[in-house]
Image (tube, rainbow over all chains, first blue to last red; front, top):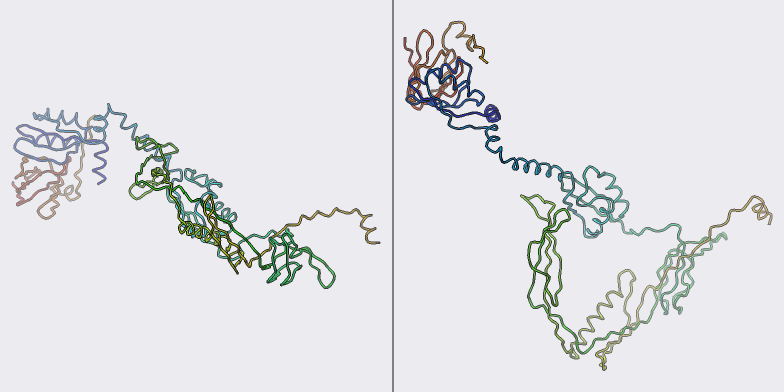
Length: 411
Length: 85
C-alpha cells in the first residue's frame, strides 16, 4: 500500500519494449539498478512499469540492447500536474475552498437547545446572545464555564446547564430549578398593603405586618389594610415588608358590545410563497415572484439546511402569503349573544387567574340591542384578594456628631 | 550518473554457496534470489540464468512482477520447475 502510494507520488510510466531479444533489455535494466514491475511478456514484446525519473536510462538501455521502447502512459502526481498545468484555476479554487472550510470551522454555526417547557427558548437564546454566544461567534473567544455560570446566575429558573461544542455545532442542555418560590425578594423593601377596590372583608390572613381590618368590615378603595409597622410586646417597633391575603366581596360590571354588521375575513385558498437562501447575512432570492397586492397575511418560516446529516450555516427563509376576502356579514341575535358570551368567558378567565384566588359569587347578565348593535352588560359579585402593595420610601438617618449624640443620651 | 553495481546477492545461502535461492509459495509465486539474467520470457515459459545451470519455469499466465539486479518475483500458474544443465 505504502509502496503503491509512493510510486504514485513520484510518478511512474507504463512502457512497451519490442525487439528480437527483449530479455536482454530486462537483464541490462536490472543490472543498472532500474526497478521494473508489472512485467508481462509476449513474443518479442514486454510491457511493464518503471519510475518516470528512470525513463532516460531505460531509453538508453533499450537502444543499447537493440530494442524499441514505447511509452504507453504516465501515471502519478507529476503527470497529473503536467496534464492540468494550464488549469491552475482548479488548484486555486481547491485551495480557496480548503481555506474557506478551515476559517468557517472556527465559528459556531448551529445551536441546538434542549430545555423544559417552563423556560422559553427565545428568552434563553437572547440571554446567551447578550453574552456573546450566538450563531457566528468565534469558538476561541468563548469561555464555556463562565458562560454557563453567568447564565445560571442571570436566570434563576435554571438549575444547571451544559454546553457541548462539537465542531461548529453547540448542544445546550438545561435543567430547571424546581423550587416553588422563585421570586426574588428585595430584603431592603418595606411596604404597606392597601385595598384595590371597595367591598366587604370576608377573610384576613396576615403573614407579615399589622392588620388594620377585620372580617366583616367594609373597606374603601386605597384604604390601609396591613401596616408595615409592627409593635412587639417588649415595646420595640419594626418596619417590615407587609405580606397578607385579605379576601373581600367586591362588585364589578362589564360592558361588551358588537355591531350588527361585522366584516368577516375569509381565506380564498390562494397562497404565494417567496423563498430565499440566507448565508453569512446575505440573502439570495430563490423565486422571481413579487410581493402580491391585495388583502394578504404573511408568515415567515425559517429552516436551517443540513448536508449529510450535519447542519450547515445556511437557512432557507420562506414567506407564505395567504389571500383573504372581506365580506360584510349581518349578525343575528343568537349569533351576537354567542359571540358576546365567548368574549365574556375569556374576560372571566383572565379576571379569575390562579394568582388572585378569585371566585365569582353571583353574576347577572343582560343582552340588549341598540342602534349601533348588541350590548352585553354583566354585574359580578366576586370574592377576591384586594391587597395592593405600596412601597414606603425611607430616608437614611443623618449621622450624628459626638456632641449631638451625647446630648441625645442626656435627654 | 552510473549507479553502483550491487556486489553481493541478497541471500546468505546464495552468497555462501554461489547458488540461486528460490522461495516458492504454492504454485502461484516464486521469489528468486541470485538471478543473473533472464534468458527467455513468455507467458508459458520463463528461463533464468543461475550461473552453472538454467532454471526454467513452465506454466500459464507467467509474468515477472518485479525485477532488480539479483532478484526476480515470478507470478502465474506454475506447472513445473526444471534445472537445465
